[in-house]
Length: 424
Image (cartoon, rainbow, N blue to C red; front, side, top):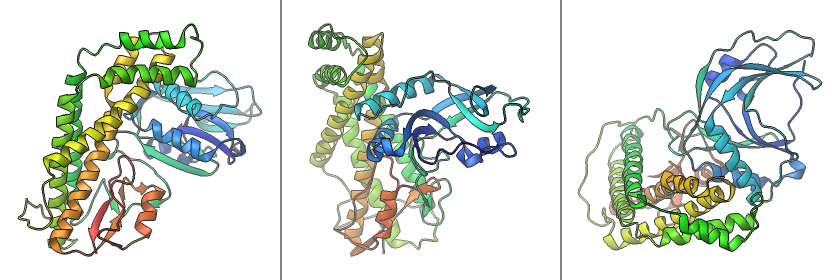
């Protein structure tokens, strides 16, 4: 029996790794590429603003990959067709679901109706009197590397934080550089670049955890309660904004010196790494996959000045604190344990890592351009890099090649962008 037509529908969903989807596929069932776990179904495209849907999904990507367990299967009845599903069990999905609803509510995107939520992955639709094609489904783990916004037949994936090397499907076209298996000159460059980001994450998060030690949001909770008075009904935008402002006041009162210093040092390190990569690209053929070392320089400065590094760190930290306050404010406004849960949200440092990722990529890109200036390069090209596929913005940048050295789009195009500028 044919599956229902949802080609005009909208949702935020998680798509499993392709191998798992293929293992779950049955004859006449859903195509493995279409299997997903719906996090929030929003109704028809006519009733949903596409840009708001994409913005909500992108905001949700600032988190670690969602881990779950396929815990068996079930048969959903009561409709025109019965539905055979794989049951998905995970506290991560419960947390993600809450963040999804908050992100949609912030953008005035309403769910068409309220109903219970049972995480599942649909395998097939069958007639009500037909036998199930699935007799047994053993438990197995699954990790979701991206959150997806589906608008009709269009699907846009936003990789989760720290998921750059996990299998992911994004946008519409293949990346020129495959991060899982870069070739030629890109192999040593991306080996170093991925290590750069991993080291930066560890260094900056360690500093954040030390700076956040002993953080007490009791005053923020008290200020929030005073601001909203007795209006403590289910969260609305005013309550979330008030909570976020109370959290931000506490966060900005701290010095965050270790974090600021770590961001500055990481930006300088990334600038040097970008310069070294740029020098290698100007002196080696693109089929050459040999490693490289630091090199002499003259015109284009290899090092970022302490002054610029300090400014970069301040900008990154300011953005991270504001985003963290918004996230913790949402938690405070919806939790039965507002102080503990909002403190845990701050401790996690998810928004800091997102801000740090942008900072590292921007400094790396500046280092590349400095190396090209040193080598007398006059034109560059944007080369897409990703796990199989890349986003529309990066594809557009690549389609606009070539660029003058000073007219090229600046890296990164978006958080966790791993594209690169190369000499023509």
